[in-house]
Each structure stands twice: as structure tokens, then as C-alpha cells.
Image (cartoon, rainbow, N blue to C red; front, side, top):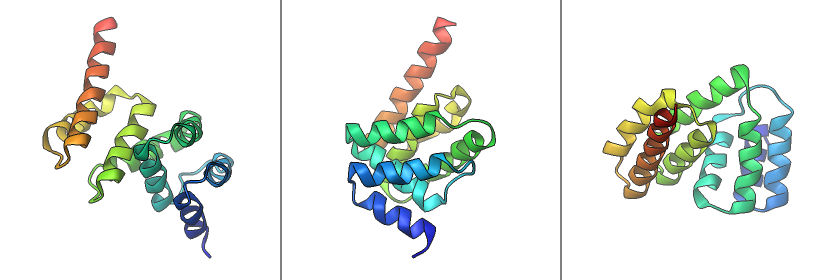
Length: 136
């Protein structure tokens, strides 16, 4: 079984220990993971299991440099995915990065996405960016 298929298989179980195993492995490799694995991490964020979200959030918050840039780019691409959970998960991952430079893309999603849930979450992200600018 290929590396990406192995990770996706473990992530699909939605079992905390298996998700933690994948995330631990990803954290020890300083390059962007395969896109399908990133997509599945986003889908898990969209599903909202608090314990799994914490594991994924710690991994994403630990990213820096080129890895952070690659992760941002990857999750921006997932905003165009056919799967609503992938788009919502991408937004949740992007919210973790808290990068106001992507507000133009988030604004587009807030206005045009086919899913009410995705539009609503994107709009809440924009309000957060606006509040941050107001505080500064």
C-alpha cells in the first residue's frame, strides 16, 4: 500500500489513535503531505470531533516557512473541491493559520459557495479578520 493510501486509510477510520499516528508522522517530515491526506485532514476538521481537531490543529499550528506556505496554498485549492466537507475543512484549516492576506479568497467563498454552511463559516472568518484590523 502506498504511503498516501496508508495515511488516508488510517484517517478514514476517524479513530483518535490512528489520526494521531498519521499526524505524528506528518509532523516529522518537513514537506507538504500528499494532497489527498491534507484533504482528509480538512474533512476531519469539518466533521468537528473536538479531540481529533485538537490533534490536527497542533500539527497545522506547528508549520512554518515553506511548509506553512505550501499548506496555505493547498488548502486554498481545496476551496474549489466538489465535496462540501473538503471546502469547509479547508476553511477550518485556513482559520487555524489566521492569515488575513487570504481574505479576498475567503470573501469570494462567503459570497459564492454553493453550500450555506461553507458561506456562513467563510463570513465568520471575515468578521474575525475585520475585528483584528479594528483592534490594530
